Image (tube, rainbow, N blue to C red; front, side):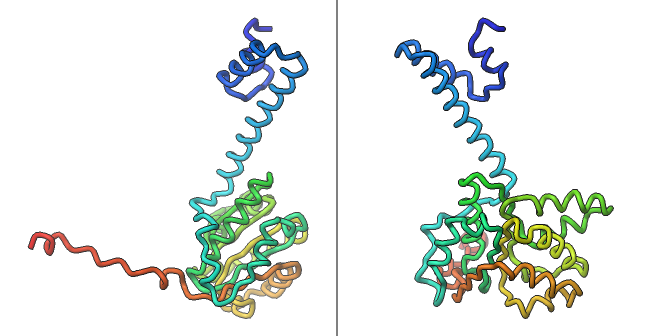
Length: 254
């Protein structure tokens, strides 16, 4: 065993930084901590470090990107929105029960922002999260060249505690896309929560998925335990003042 206590702790698998460990040992010496207090403090330091690393790793996997603060969301802008339902969703009770969420409204009304904040809440509570556009997820799966490769890649979307599929209805999909989404929804059914944002009512999904044979079963399974949050609003962008057009270099020289 090394005579250096920092090296000895590192050899045991401590992940806290050497500087933090040295500071704790120095404080323990100066404060004449009992051995029990020192052990508890080192254990607490190590747990905080491991929790922070775990959160960082889960955040990278979640791929939420930049998220506009929730207090920037103007709840008075929509003509209709069930804020009480959204506040209930933020408690993550739906996630614990393996239920789904559909955020529905036209483009630019804040669906993605609200979905991402559900993801942030889940991350803070210790859950695994994956955020992706639906088109991106389906294209990712369709690029796999063999069935075993598809099965391996499907785990990226079937294993997270919370899966957020953004923008159903905005980008056209391949004929096999509905089958892949059905496999994702079926494997997550009643065990893991899925959030979908869309501008389409359920009755419009057949046109998007080209009347795929599995579509009825897909909608039935997703909708069976699903909270629907409709946002009746004009696009936020229509509310913001238009920027003045940038002058061309030629016009600025006049």
